[in-house]
Length: 88
Image 1: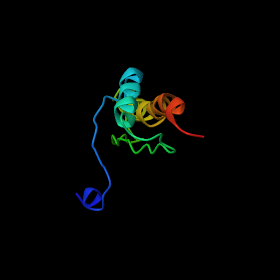
Image 2: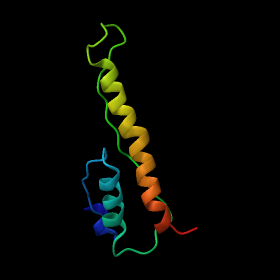
Image 3: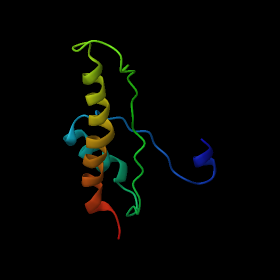
Image 4: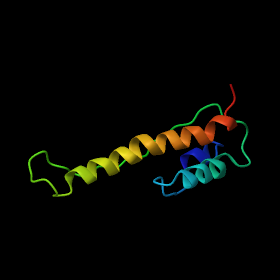
C-alpha cells in the first residue's frame, strides 16, 4: 500500500520454484508490461530443521538437499530466465 501511495507499482506473484519452467513463467509474468528492468532481486528461501545428530535415513539429508535445490538451483533458473530481459 505504501508503494502505491508513493506512486509506485507492486505485486506479489507465486510459483513452484522447484520447477525451471515455473521459474521462467514467473519471470515473464513479473516483467510483463513493465519497462526494461535493470535488476533482479531473488528473495526466496526455506528452512527445514535438519539436526546433525541422528541416524542415517532419518530424512535430514533429504531436507538439506531440498533447501539447496531451492536456494541454488531455483536462483540459477530465475537468473537464467531474466538475463535476456535485463538491460545492460
